[in-house]
Length: 325
Image (cartoon, rainbow, N blue to C red; front, side, top):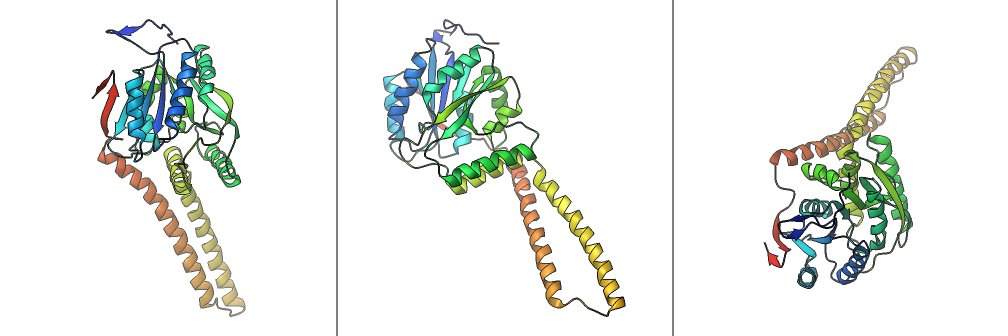
């Protein structure tokens, strides 16, 4: 399964054994340290490698830092978007441009330590086709973040048929066969850690200690986390739609029972349900209907996005082999 010859060439260029893909969005302070640590980890492997950095429309000095890194080291390739398309789109672009036989996905904020990469590669060399890094601890995270993350992974495990490992992020190694399958998937609302589980293949875990963010602010505030969670749920489960049907049948049953009870009360005691109770029930049912119309709208919006057929991202330029393309 794993071809690991460091002398494979295409034309005159050596094909890298390992490609590291890292999305970059406003990481000006972190990038030099990230580059240094990744290169040190990769050089310890003793195999040809490349580092693909995807600039996701950064608005700080990150593009200048990326240019300097590429000029200094030809093993650094830079893919720049025309605007910010999002973290998952940046990962997808990195996979498309990766040339290695194994591809490691890692964030550039240094919360995921590059020093774990050799262990991921060792598992791959032993036969694993997907090696995902599983967080043993998460330093610097708030209790709220830890609680919501734990709840999300347990919820997604219950409502989907895909076995998405708990306490994992996008930090993982993918064999070339897996990368080819993921690149072929063109859906817009992407949850890459779910897709890498969905494609199957032999998967193994490596436990690691997640560090605090090296510098800057998180790129996933609560609003983005909620949107990300919604993409994961709607991308891998019909449970929200099924819940609407289940609740509809339940409310219909309760309504039939209420009609019978009201009729009996009217016949035996002459009691009539007041307008306040009727108004409350109408508002309750109206609210439930609007909620589920919103859920249906989320799925319908995703269908609309797929039908339009727009590209996942637009690449403005690529820096590779000392040239701009």
